[in-house]
Length: 249
Image 1 (tube, helix red, strand yellow):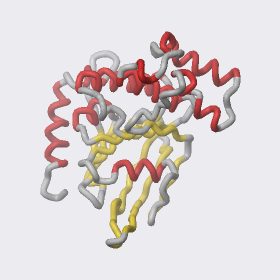
Image 2: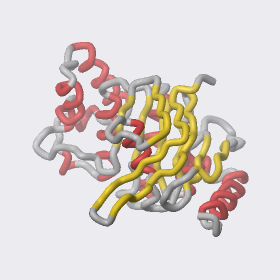
Image 3: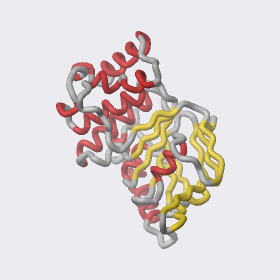
Image 4: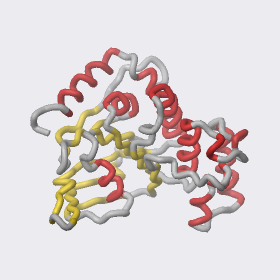
């Protein structure tokens, strides 16, 4: 498969009045076209900083970062504007990029109809559940037609049941729309059920401790909910749990 993201020896330092803080240290990984890669690590390990570097919101202190495709960034909070209705929230990226036209509006309307949001297009964010708001946020990210999605703990604000249901929806949308994705999480089950491969990060300064290919023997089409029920799931869980909690962190 073709590599569309390549990170080599990425280091990122921040500075404050106490001095220099090393957040990322010698990070290396790649993303192939069509893959979902999860960056799995403890809270505060610098996972979001990696996404911010990939999105060119931060510059690396050292190392090389190559991104060959367009990026869409879905943040931890949905960031919906309460005074705009759903379809107007979704089109805001197109307005900023001056790309709102008949073709792009038609594409958004198709997405809304395909993923069960069409009947809610004229409602306002406060009228929607947390899970539905996250679906809207994903459609907004897709509105500018990115090739790569950066997902920064997009389910963390949801209750457990909604989290699993929304992860199923997001996974289906990523696959149906033929996107590649990098997901940030500290949830082991989420990482296994969503991903093609998982990079284990250490505590800060973050390094890539190990990379695991996730191969689950699924009967029929994979979904995160079904993935949690196959025998290999527990095996991967035990391996990743041990890796995350090893004394080498």
